[in-house]
Length: 477
Image (cartoon, rainbow, N blue to C red; front, side, top):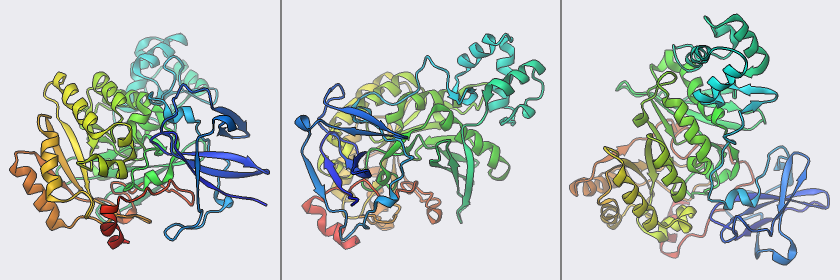
């Protein structure tokens, strides 16, 4: 008899999956970490074929509340929907303050070959010298990977390089980290690109043309996301794994290679696709550095923007190590609301986030943070919210984007009306804030903000709605 249980386990502020083998059949658990230290020795990890199963000894097991696998607003769950090929992370991966990342002392590999797009320029130079070739060959290769409108995917596209060097590359190096799966085109010209990873997982990248001569590529940093923001479709997936620096960089390379002839020059990068970039901070910073390298993709640092839900330690690291732009997904003006719609706020409170920004930006010259505010009808769009938002951002060099909520399957929320968004904006602007209304792009192909990914049947749980907002939520269902 196969059984399936969904467990709500309090061990942190992000959601993860846990597989326990019971009677030979996998049982999938969704867990919410909170208080367990990353240094705790109460966890053990056992490998079952291609995935990890993490569990607690019974003597130290946190309390578990079992939820019904069938509810009025959720589809029944079945063990048939569980994929044994998905690698599952251990509890330490979620509770640690450190973001994911490749070992900086180990070159990225694909099988036995070195993965070219996972290397910084310095690493590439060292690798080229280690094979007996001049550093000038490294610069020529770098330019053909990222510049000169070549965006090389194979040795045949490396015109001008040393013949012996090209042979070495064909034997020891791999050009591609992603495989193109599909391109979907929205009625407004937005393109959603689906990429297949080596392990069979799929990520999504969005290219957004603009008639003002600016085209933006929106890249993903993770497969899924652990933050479980209640308004975000990607958050329903939970986290499958981090993307490598090569997998992140190649999204921008592919976008230029595939679409530059159709949409014009791609000038901007936003880390606003699938995942929380600062949860994968090492790989994201490395990828951003490759993107802005003046001999490569050569994006302006101010036109490469990382968006975060508010992981405070990693936010400090990013501001200290990168010159790229920062966006903070705020979406609420009180801890009560933000605790609900963005569970990471339970660990890093709104006040801490704001004060950290205020303090860190004192040391950044001519630097403005972008606050993103997704407007949810009856939840965070009152005039009192507008007034509190003015107070929160006071003293912080910033711009504010008001974003219309983009509905998706199973969503609890409805968008704020256009009229109310304009009134909300006018209150902010009247107080001297720089504020913009951001239009939805690509929503007919599920390519708009908060719509990426494919959660499947097993999803991160919806959190309890605070009593004062139940009327608004019930009205939207």
